[in-house]
Picture (cartoon, rainbow, N blue to C red):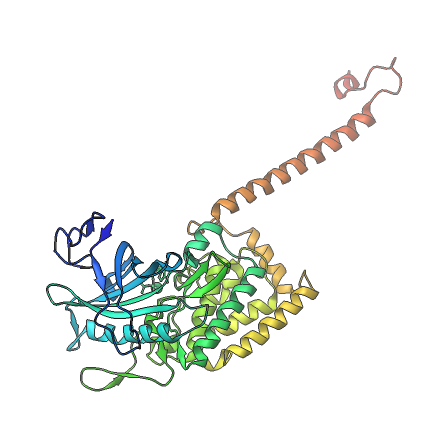
Length: 398
Ligand SMILES: Nc1ncnc2c1ncn2[C@@H]1O[C@H](COP(=O)(O)OP(=O)(O)O)[C@@H](O)[C@H]1O
Ligand SMILES: [Mg+2]
């Protein structure tokens, strides 16, 4: 099928043979001839196969596309498009603001070479027949699922995976921050688990921001754009004072979600998140996450190298003490036993099965104990001489 790029078209699905959309007559082959000055010399065209996501508030659509000029292994790519919804805010078109954010993402992905970030292949604008513009970014398709989907399929993560994943993301952030950028929207749905090598990839750089860089509004006033997601955004970022440590806060909240299986907004108070973990974790890891989610950015680890060093220390500690001594941990474990069943828990099936097994073991244990006691009583009351009738309470009373 061929999918029409026009967001206002009412019948966007077309047959494989169609050249232009049957409904709005826009071309179904999207060419990249309106390119910025990024040294992109190749003329390319794309056919949209399907839409993966539509985000109306950000006027963004994510498509899977076929790159007609690419070799077989690189044919399928992702096209992120933003369009004009003609709504204005404070005298400025939302599209103008979004375009500025999108240009950052385009530039960032196009020039970044970290394997933990999708490769940007192409950047262009496309004009519809009604002259409306759509800005496009073509990037590498990460085959896998995002961590929100991963959690729904697999349940909350254990310590070993938490340490591995935390290290992978911090290393990606290290290169982002080193290039004087920060992400500003870290959360489970913006991290993908790549099937190819089981590694994590950070996506959605729409909110990426240059450290010290501000953008001006229509009146020429300097401002920081407010981006971030409720439950993950740091307090200072919410107040439009984002700093690189704001990424650490969102990262900490992301791991609260991954370890508890609960969205951080459902954990009240958040300082007690550790009582909701699904598998035991060591105290130093709890401490690190607690430091990442500190309210003040000054109290959080100041850079990625410090976090990586702490992760190394935790790994060594866990290796040396597989059962890590922690009085808090035993409290957590005892609290875990009394946790009520949770409806928003993706691994609740696992919990109910393990609960069933646990109760069966208890019932069997008690049953066994009763059987032993009965056997013991039976042996003591058995006649020693076959000729003597057994003494029963009734017979005794006679
Ligand atoms: N490069 C990519 N490869 C594979 N899937 C992607 C890619 N980029 C985005 N997606 C999918 O689309 C979803 C939304 O993409 P994202 O860039 O986060 O846009 P939004 O701004 O709408 O959140 C992601 O959660 C992911 O499932
Ligand atoms: Mg996203």
